[in-house]
Amino acid sequence: MSGQETVRDTGAAVTGRQFTIRNGGAEATITELAAALRTYRRQGTDLVQPFSADELPPGGSGILMAPWGNRVRDGKWLLDGKVQQLDLTEPSRGNASHGLLRNTGYAVASAAPDAVTLAGEIFPQHGFPFRMRHTATYALDAGGHLSVRQELANLGRATAPAAFGAHPYLRVGDVPVEDLVLTVRGQRRLVADERLIPVGEEAVSGDTDFRGGKRVGDVRVDVAITELEAGPDGRYEHVLAAPGGRRVALWADKTFPYAHIFVTDTYRGEPLAVAVEPMSAPADALNSGRSLAWLETGESLVGTWGIRSWL
Image (cartoon, rainbow, N blue to C red; front, side, top):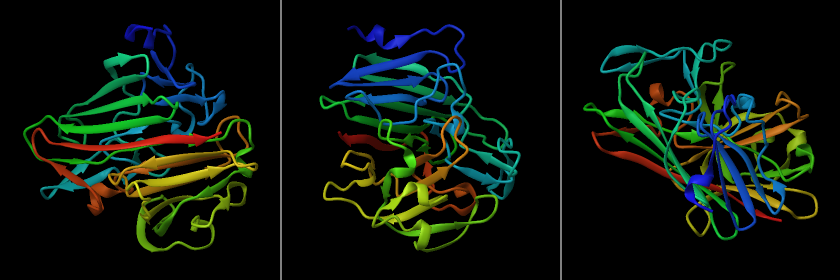
């Protein structure tokens, strides 16, 4: 297979061109729109919620988020004492949501049978006067496990704020999501208001304490968990386990000290879905400054996360 065969032109598909990579008995398809992970199957088992090439990613399914993740209250933040007004992309809550590339087509930087690199350009615009490039490399290793490397580079002359994240919904084949057990080894959680903007922090407890594992069907949460416990390899790992022992894990390096967990009964066509989102900074970081990176000209924020499974 040549690198050119990685790219499939689907004509007028809503999500644009489709980039399919294969290795180790696994296959993943990434969309031109938002560099979203549309499908990922290993050994014939779906490990993320799949969606059609001809529909917008439901609930932000699989999209990458840059130059911030999650939300900005009122779409407003201060830069050098001046109010910046972002476009409100979540009008129901009055927020700017999920960065600036959710509705942008990414260009192919390189393509091979087992990997593809896509780049999205951010130009100065309402509320964000910076020139940046977000690059994502999706790759499958010899075992069929997926890795995603995100890089956000400052191409402009001014120092620029930077954060990113991803929005995959995980599953284990046809096992009902409500029967999966989620484990997230994090000590603290951010307390959010009715607009899902953080207003405080406290120890995890009750429905937000996933350290010992919690059945997904027993909770409805939309919460950022932090003070994550890294494993011996220095990475964070958040695990969904099915009855019988099959498991899928989203791992992330230390660039992603937040795991945003979203359990919802509003995902299109599914009684329940669970997003496990690696985040370099929490919601409203442009205002709080929490974990927000500031990049000089030519500098980049780089982080890698991935999905592995035991089937």
